Length: 130
Image 1 (tube, helix red, strand yellow):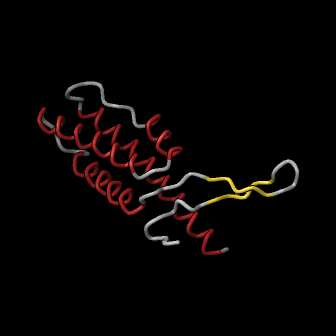
Image 2: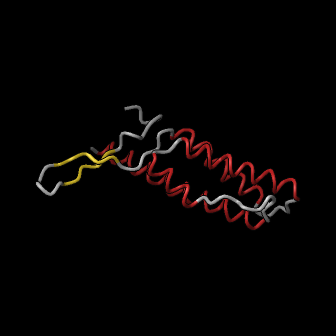
Image 3: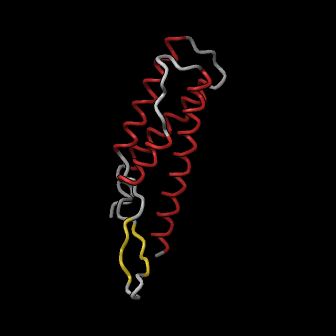
């Protein structure tokens, strides 16, 4: 398995009721390099706009970047993680969202991605220990 490009082979063995072990596919990142790049971009963007005043044009552009980033992230995730992302990264309803709406949406996405990255690291560590 090429750990730099795929973590989608992560599996957990669970005890079946009859005592046999059956493989169960768990959450997977199908394109980890892409997810890491997008996550880094979103985090950097949040840092850049955290204290800067935003005009209508920049808020509109940030909304576009946010929506495109969520779509691109979803493309690199397994169906279960994609569904989780869809539930958590709600679309920004306003044509031009407020500064606060944008910052909250980006911060929520960054937090979710950091949790995902910790999960990837834990999976890779567990695979190395096996």
